[in-house]
Image 1 (cartoon, rainbow, N blue to C red):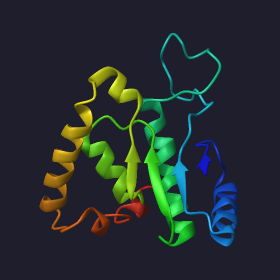
Image 2: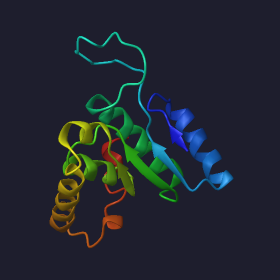
Image 3: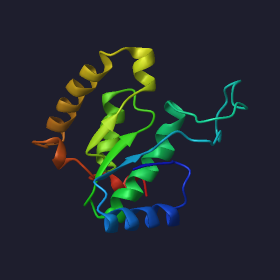
Image 4: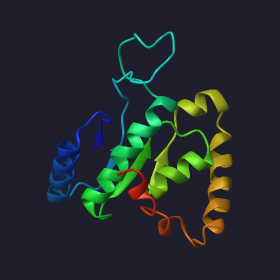
Length: 144
């Protein structure tokens, strides 16, 4: 199940409840946004889904709310605006047990995945985690 970043807290809670009750294996948070709030690009008037960096904050907020609503009992995949290991780690701490890249790879190339993996290893060690799973959800309250 892949959800939008433009949902209310009530909608996120309802999606979480229904997904848990239905036995959904996981949720991808999030798809592209229709919002152009805060965008200063000359293209801000364009229609359609917006991806990349402007999606980072709203998608991470949705991710953290989903983690809280599911009690950490569901696999969540963090998507939206990830372009570095720090971004990926933020998503993990907000509740993601995996992350997905796309837009940043278009601009930085396929080697971005390896750079992120190396950076994540270092960040996990620095924070005293033995495994990625130990960090999942540790920063949820920063986004609620």
